Image (cartoon, rainbow, N blue to C red; front, side, top):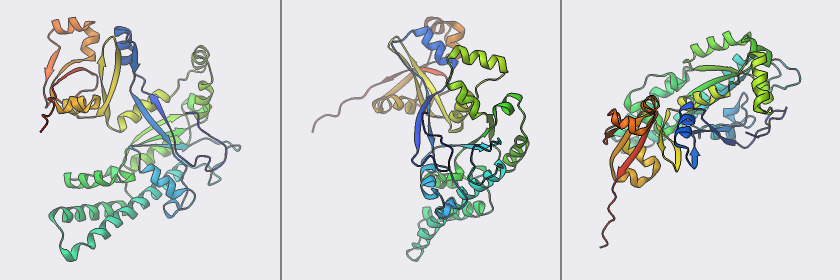
Length: 348
């Protein structure tokens, strides 16, 4: 990402962001097939946010800034330090990733509690005038979620009704966001796939709602980043290791419930990112709002069918090229052409 990573607390103050391409053999194959003039792969936007310390919810360290920044993201990569190095400082002057997780999650929940209580207090002020049905439902949802979080549980691990989900979606609480735990190991531990903290971290994660854990080595990744491709390949082969970055990027993309479809032709091959379970008109709208407004149908073939049969004509001959209407739920890997018609409004 080309951002500062200095050896002192709060090196990062303002968020740093970068787009990383999603590694996908399907996209590479489509580019080879269509040989377009331009290519647009799918991407994930990664935001590096300032670190958090105990008491952040009360403003310690860069707490308030950190928490406002993290509220704006869709999902969280939680990086845990699990390597010993006296030359690399730790804000608590020790290495204990399990305790680090406890601190961070406690602070995130504290911020959620503060915000939920604010919602409840605002609704209570309306009681003398009488609450509407919707406000009563919001109050009930807020009180249930508050009780859950005050028990030390993250919102993402709860089982919520449709009304409660609507309340959560409206407020985007931090502990409701999907999380992936990235455990930063020494290069030696990463290569040998062994570290004393991994079983303890796995146990902690399973006891706190469960989520994906991905070991990686920041030291190794930094080393590989500076190598030419041929040297990188030789180094990985010699040491029996691979970069964890592709796995991390793909996992992050899936965690925030995104999929993508392709549009393909000699002009360009492009990935279009949409929410999982989006219907065809909404997918068309990702290209242009007119496509959604005047949606007629989607002409669809799936990547797997195209690769199996070799070209579009063969897909059509096999009856695999189909037309789908407004209720069609898009599938990851669909290749689409949309038909639409937008009639200009008559001047009055």
